[in-house]
Image (cartoon, rainbow, N blue to C red; front, side):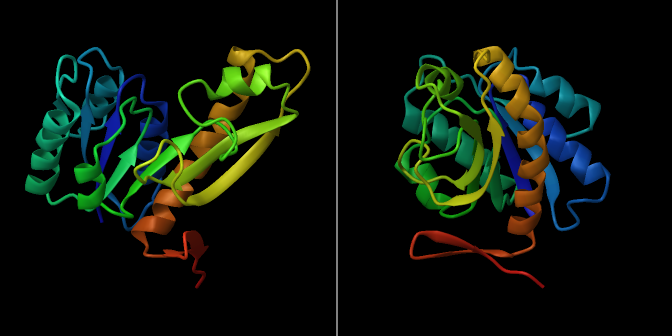
Length: 201
């Protein structure tokens, strides 16, 4: 399947997907392009290094619908089938989501539905959570509310802060995101009554 990655920053999850692809762990997946909404995003350097075409669409001073239409034009012209959000710090419009219904995945650094939104690590620390982790989910029109595909947890220690918790969770993100992408591009995921069912061989 033809896959596009959307990123806003360093793109470490994008890197984990590129690594998995180069190791042959994503046999049914072709990473065709990267789209970033910030010209300084380090994800661009990763794309260059791995010969992945990239597009910069500045989102500053642009309406959400206008920005999303520009993205859709690129995705459609490249016949993209799956959209992967890798630290993409924008909420997608209804039109974009309906164009790629059940074909957009995101990774979030908490055990959803706990601690949605942009400050998951901070919220987990402030709530004195004993366990946190990460969640890969399908994207719907809410904020981090789509059907959950896979989760993995870590213990939150009493002396953890936002930074140390992030450092604990990031390697798990890098492990499970390529796994989910492999399942999705291998047509092994189905949504039934709002729940994700994984089909095994």
